[in-house]
Amino acid sequence: MAEESGLNYIVIDGEAAFYGPKMDFMVKDALGREWQLGTIQVDYNLPDRFELEYTGSDNEKHRPIMIHRAPFGSMERFVAVLLEHSAGKFPLWLTPEQAIILPISEKYQNYAEKVLNLLQNSDIRALIDERSEKTGRKIRDAELKKTPYMLIVGEREENEETVSVRKQGQGDVGTFTVPEFVEMIRKEIGKMFDNG
Image (cartoon, rainbow, N blue to C red; front, side):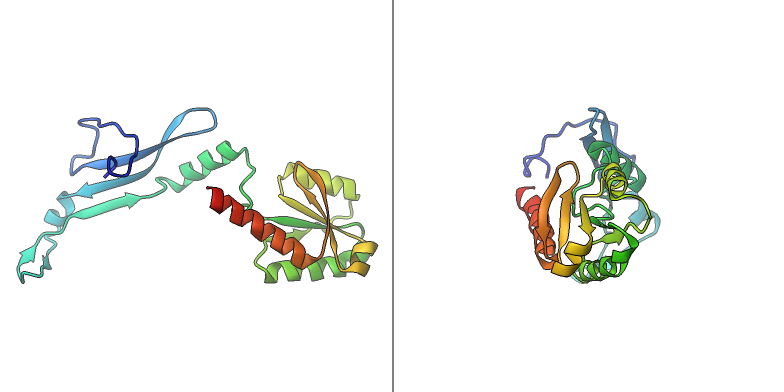
């Protein structure tokens, strides 16, 4: 199967579990260390032990072969490798908060909530920074948290029904309506999957 799929592999005799052949999928983390994540294993033992049977198309009893699969291995190990590999900067489609709305004062809280509602209705994961900090501090904190997009809202944005957009690590990218911003995120996510 690995050969037919064109995968690089090595055979290690005596390494598989005692009850059948096994494939382990090894990945390297950002530091070049190898980790076993996914695994698929054939099990001839448990079907015998539990006397499992099925009736085949020939109307005869047959013993099934069990396949154990763990596509991510230990979920904790998978998440740890992913965090380390991405240095905490998840791809846009995976990050818990894709955008944070930064009202420049509490006067614009209602507009920030309107923007949040529009984003959530478009399946964009966002939240509002409601702290009474200066906008520069909110931006700095969002950058440190590696939030992909910061949407700044104030008087101009409320009057024009727009958001001023900053991208993490890149700075200002312009002013957009909420539907334009949603479309921009969708295109960015689409490119990730088209190229990947």
